[in-house]
View 1 (cartoon, rainbow, N blue to C red):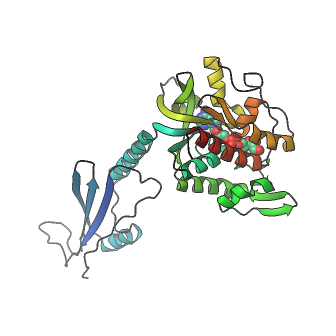
View 2 (view 1 turned 180 degrees about the vertical axis):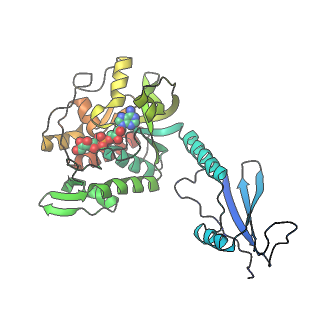
Length: 347
Ligand code: 48F
């Protein structure tokens, strides 16, 4: 069987491709041209195939060309692998190196931000979307494995939730069409809402780091100027491991009912917040209609450099809870983004 050499360009990953070296790889399939000689390869009666893969990497000051090769002994296995892997041979070490290098690049890039968002619930995701869309350097940190906070579970694990008329402009920005239930009430599949918010926010340029918990803030000149981070599992396990730090012009506490970031600031720095009492007032019981408008009203800067949104805003200012109606959460995220943009001097 005669095979023509082929070149297979790799598609770059649109989300993880950042600044830095641009890697281009191409694979050349070398035709076997019959059987490989017994003296060089002990493969009597079999066809062997060479795969040569060239990697071209661009660095700021130099260019690196490298090559790797593999031999397939078995024709059937070769074609099977070739077809399903698009001609690219897998190497476990390359897989590990790719993950480590790409993650380090992404995390290093997030050490100096315009805005650092803590919490991957609805308000954090929506804020991240609008900030990224406005061209700001913004990253979101979530200590759990999955992003989405309280959206996934809908109401009492029935994976449907309710949104109101007021939030429909945000839903259409995200290309989400809710289902009409009755006048003023729309429903949404909570899995659909979660995944779409994440997807659109990342496409807009929001960088998301799951499994990273924020345990403290950075203070500079009496202002919140960054975050102190550690693996989410470190606090779960109760290990004593020193954290790492990032700087941000603004921090958004979108940590939900716990208002974790504002709480740690008050506890450690004994500061006065821009709330009625000067401290964390604490969340009140259920009153959905009141809570929905309070969530938006309470969204804002509570200490220089620190904004609150979503349920964290209600916990800090003493607002009511509202349960599985999510319009206020989406609107709060949008308001947080607009206020922060103003703080950043965005025109
Ligand atoms: O609670 P959550 O969904 O925040 P939200 O945007 O939305 C609230 C609603 O989901 C719901 C509601 C609607 O009517 O009342 O509760 O206010 O998501 C907050 C996320 O923050 C993460 C937490 O795991 C959750 O996913 N989180 C909390 N503390 C930290 C954190 C921390 N210290 N570091 C990182 N992530």
